[in-house]
Image 1: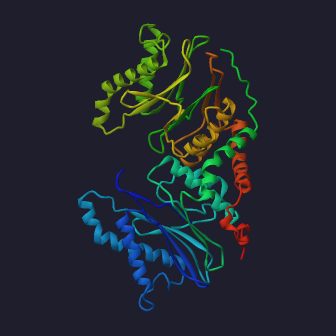
Image 2: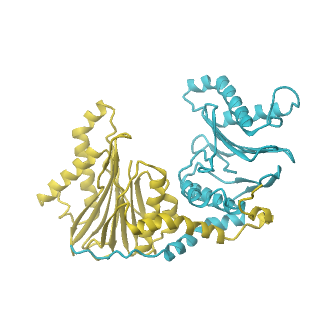
Length: 234
Length: 254
């Protein structure tokens, strides 16, 4: 799971915010949230979820729910609450109050599961055929994931592919920016495998950024040429 | 929607356009979005377009009418590519002035844009994009390509894999992959693809091919590119911060 860190409210109001939040009870559960959309809304949602999770008693929270769909439902519920509270004020100023969450991970007793929570608070689960979700500026980085990642892809290959996908996106859209928060979860471990903040100074990311293109050019040189006759009679 | 791309290389130019036209999910048609004004040894002017179909067709009709008259407004006579781009912009403005207000009454989007490129004897190859307002910009050293229509899915591969030094054929292969990416992600972009390769200073259209679904080469790209890309990612060095061998294990069953 990976997220960028750019937030902007115009070209001269750019800042860096983490969009990955982890709820972890090692050996018992790992729930990772990625957020996109209105920053005040997503922060209020995360704050509400964290505050719920501080209570060991009372209604279920992200550290006590028994299944991932319930976790997605909690995120959707918190989102609806914030939207109801703040939405009308934002609407008065024509401010976009939309927000999305990707909710994934594993709770003991279940397989790893991945959900997308819509701005309306409802949610869908990833399937075998479409084993990934993207939110935000999704188009530039989609083809490489489509082509390279399948359910049987090793974690490290998928992680490399995600970095290329981010590089594709950041080249084309300045509203997406480093650092990248990369979280790797290995099935049935019930603890975070790798959680790394990849900044501009990261030598591996620099290598992807500067050299992936020449790798691609080599692939095109190796791809057989068509046998179309080059000159057509005019 | 539409996808068109034109790339300018030291070796020449590659142009490509899709053929999908739609006005809703049940009104889908196939239309060509490429036109070539070619007089061998003298000029090759290639046009690609995106936007309102009636508007773009009317612009083409007007350009053809002007060109038949062989006057100042003929694409056969203009002495430089920037004037060809200017003519396209002028025709677009004329059609917009005539039809725009009627389309606006029904809230129909009348915008259209064109890519105009090629070579006229006496100058080097040049590439322009004509905006919906009829003004235009020329491709530069830094950005040697233009895309119009649904450009996002197919952009990164062109950005990374094509440089000014790329050969025509490698650039053409990359453009086909860029189309394959776009076709897969957006159903409002559709086959066939019209592909034209122009070799610098040849002053004739080199390859001008319509690539349909049955084209074996495009099928090969569609089927094999993903596999080749997967292998390239695999062969790419792993980061040292991922030394945990468990991360490299495939399809951890359990």
